[in-house]
Length: 76
Image (cartoon, rainbow, N blue to C red; front, top):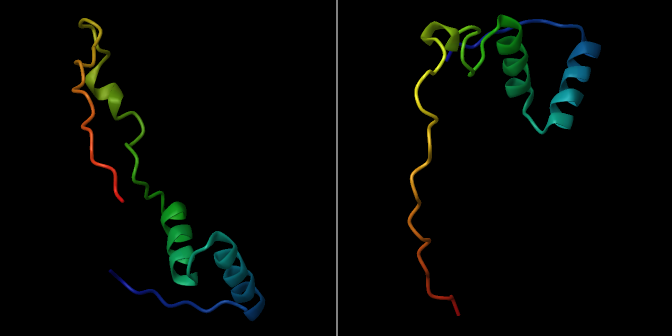
């Protein structure tokens, strides 16, 4: 993973640290998330991805019956 270095005014650095703390993230993680969001990087599907495959025209999909849950011994 690449490391980036930048300089910001002290007041901006303090605001970023506060926002990171409020979000429960380290400053590094918080800034990395901001950069990813701004760069348009996401973990989701690209826009229009499912349109490439057309609409499902077959019979409705049904979930097969599920096996019963296992029974476990109680802990003492």
